[in-house]
Image (cartoon, rainbow, N blue to C red; front, side, top):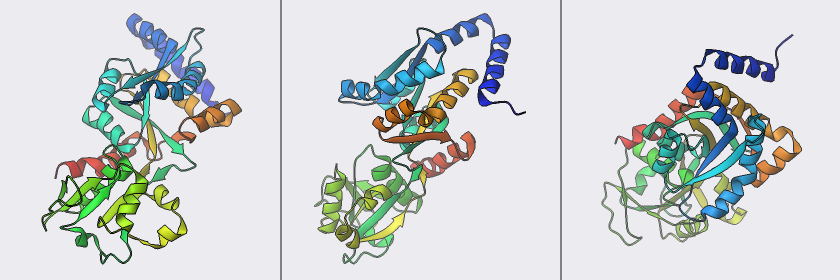
Amino acid sequence: MSRTPRVIFAILFLGVIVSSNAAAQTREKLEAKTISLGIVAEAHQQEIEEHFRDFVHYVARKTSSASAVEGRVVIAPTLSELAKLLEQGKVDFYMDSPYPTYVVNFVHGAGKLLLRRWQRGKAEYRSLIFTKKDSGINHLEDLRGKIIVFEDPESSSGHFMPKFFLLRNGFKLSEKGGLEANVSPSEIGYIFARSQEKLVAMVLAKQAAAGAFSDDDYARLDEKRKSDISILAQTELVPRHLVSIRKDMAPALAARLGEVLIAMHEDDQGRRILQKTGDTTKFDVLPEGEEGMRRRLLETFYSAERK
């Protein structure tokens, strides 16, 4: 008869306790009493903390058997600060889109991939580079000397993914101060619209040669605007969100945290909390494993940054 995941976890946990020294055992107890979720936010920190509070309390309660377990939301103003908090053990896990995950885990070396997070029923997404159908632009090469509009400086799908895609395909990009800026024939200039609605409007009004947004953004457009758009290119698929843990988390605790998150959508309370937490559908294992996902993120972001 096969062992259940809970039995396997119990055996693994017992083995860790037996083999650990006294200091490690003390640390395990501390870890079991507090589970901290890290979130990056420069503004509206109190509202964001409240938004994730039920989620982290649920996870903490399910992860630890300690009677006084505490779930905490820790807000960091920047990715580098989140990396420091992970290294200091003040944050246990965090959830973010592909590019911030790449920065924290592989640039700062502070995190380790654990799971994939589904949102709005989708596990993965991609960016689309588009133009207006009658713009006279038919290929990416036609964007040289012109301006493309990205959505927001911090957006994975609305900035980093399309920008690095263009860089990997041999284009030189230069940020500009506005639509009237000069762009040399050898480069593509770019600006930020700061909203998806404004980005689409600028492209359809031919104020900008092209724009970039996610395939989800495209799917939400009305049929009229869809019919006015021509897709020039699409990036690779990447996970919508990823869950990462601090690098020195004990294997037993990491296994239990993963087990709790994966099972969360299977009970009524868990599903309700997930829906309120950024319209999360569920969590699942990394399809290519940790190393395979690491390679995908490096191929998407690292090679382009070296150009």
